[in-house]
Image: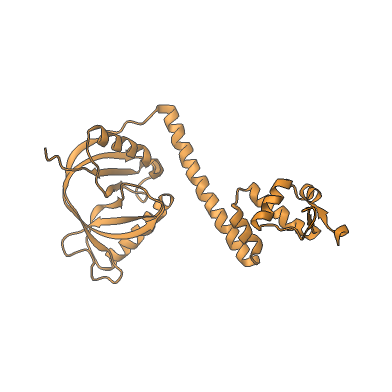
Length: 272
């Protein structure tokens, strides 16, 4: 049998892997040699293991985690395709985030931090019919889009008259898994409580807020939040959640460069 097997060095050269990598894959159980000499500890591989080894090398070149590669190798064709498509989608999401960061860096490099006029005012109490979603920071856009569809369908089905704009409600701290909400201002008793699976009623108290307006793509909202939070802290104020976004001009009304979003952060009342 020994004559049919490949030494670890020869197998490494054949599969474009290093001896160190093969040893690590053996230790983790990802690619175990078919024979280990009891006396010398030398590892030997069968020629038919080359396909798995080459697949590992290819997927590692794409930065797939070893755990994902292990599941891929162990799966049948159908499940393997689903695993790889899921990784493809994650990569596409990462590329999209990187492209957004690149665009913002270019804007900052060309003109420095954009100037936003931050004003202090009092916000009235608002009664909102809301639908909720749980998402990651990267999934906020998709969560809001899906929430808008659910909300408008529910309100339309109940013939509820609501007052523009639509609102987004977000926690102060963007956690890995967080609850967001999309809402519309409705009159008392007109929020669609009787609709099965319909929206909830949230009463946002009135009080002092810091606000600014962002014109441009939603992907560049962090620039406006930077200016808004900086102004809040420079004034010695304490922000309170939820952070509110009022979509004054939305995607159905204008190209993304002309979208208009009002950002509102409630602050603690000055009791001094």
